[in-house]
Length: 216
Image 1 (cartoon, one colour):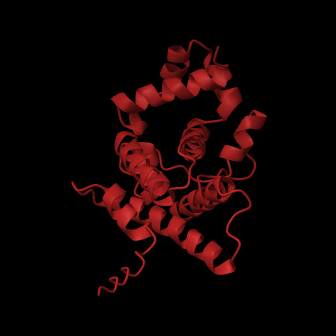
Image 2: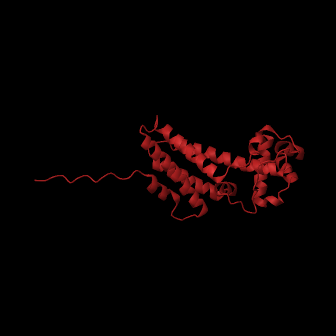
Image 3: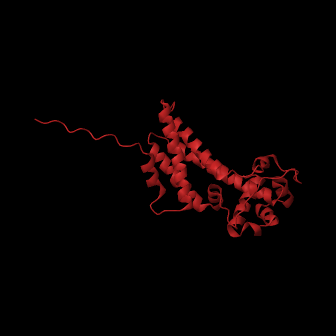
């Protein structure tokens, strides 16, 4: 059974699907969640606090999804893992406007664009709110977090990780490139799909062609 906080966040997301953030009322969110308005204020402090919690929750859900996908796709084929991650990121951002805004920094008029909480907030909010009140991660921070999570997952799939420093650096570059390519497709979608591009970009270069065998 969801907690009061989870119910309120879900109710706020449903309201945001139907109307711009400026038209979302706290009293309606509380009623939809089946709790009192005071409970809402106790959890989030204000409408801005609720906005910060929504955005932080979206970021956390995305990071958890990245970890889950990489664990499910664990295996020797790095290019396929990274292509799957890029495709999932682009598809999820297309379906979730809050994630798209987090990844690009482009907050439309319909979305909350939360700022970090100021000092001396009038409400003593719940402990779970304090992390959200620090403000949402910047797009560069999101990209760096996904790169680092991808690198850690790929190293774990390899056991002890690449033995040579050059190989480790190359793997880190492939993770970085994957994230950057995915973000470019979030900003400017292309019908050919990001997976094809990632597979081409991060696959190891082909080795030299075998020399023809001598005859006669």
